[in-house]
Length: 493
Image 1 (tube, rainbow, N blue to C red):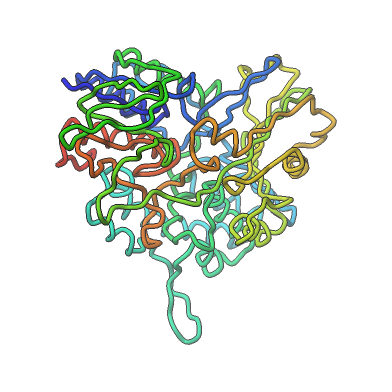
Image 2: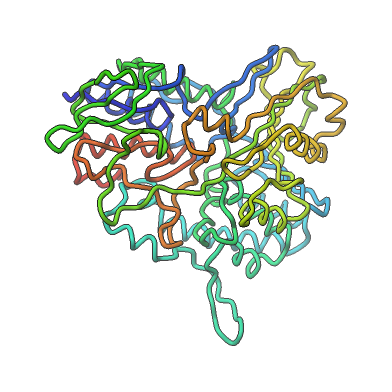
């Protein structure tokens, strides 16, 4: 039985802690803030409740596996999962509206044909078939296995089997997500639908590899889920599972560095100068949080830089949620190129009318009574950007396309900026990590879960396999596997 110190109480770090504790280890978690969950937080005021981090859960199988492996109570005994249907309602720049069914290829094809015209659904359906090939080729190395030492193979190989495109008498295959849209979808609304999945993770579709096609496929294949009471309830359930397995939590305990002894990790040093000795250390925080970061081996993946952030506006409304309202509406930018230039150009700034995701959960736990509604607006913004009340007003203006009489119903609103994310997570500029993706010369891979320092491991969104709730949860499984089974561990079978 080893003594294991875990740095940070994010969801990925807690997933590792629970798995390690059930394997018989003594696990202690050190969290610099006063609560668990990392970016998965909740804001409450006047009887309203809002998720200030992720609002929906893709690929819930990751957390079902966590709860099965760490106790008798399955996930559904600890939280109530609700499949969101439609998966999303899309409002395009030309006024076209398309509600898309959850986890139904035939339903999505029919819905797009009806909304965008005959043939649109077929092109999207054909794209999903190719996206599935990319998923099948990368699922294990990018989600279920530790990052291979020869990770350069993933960096060089493009797994998306795009259709050839003739240009200048030469046959080419799509190398970016934008090229997939232009060559294979051939409709600005389908292009916007495709690129919105990359934009939600802070990725520029003009630079994101074609392998980013797995992002819409993941949602299509495994559905979109909501946790009753908000995603914060998932973090609570993971925290309580840790407590049930006798994981110790130390809140308000800022770790400044990893203690080394005889060439191994031997504990953590706290901001007050004390040392907590340990046989193994799991680091679950963003790059730059520790004064002395983990050493990297030569040729290792470099931590992702330049990730985007999010602006979130929380709306408290008078009047109940109308029957039949979609849980999620994506309001697409009127000028997509201007939005991308503003986000990813040399002089980054927030677009005045960005793509906005409107979440309107049908959840009595989030409102004081049936005569009120809680709505969350989110938009991707540059990390470190100086957002203010004017930018929040821009999001509200965009959301009026999705919520009739929004301003007349508005009681108050709260804003969460990149600076707020930075305060909670410690990530520079409030950056939010993207999931790991193949190709792109490895720019969208994340550092391995093992490190150059024996006894030190990495979990959470800033390590393999990257950001997003499913990926963070899987990082915990990979770290636990490497510690329990050793370096020969090759993932779940």
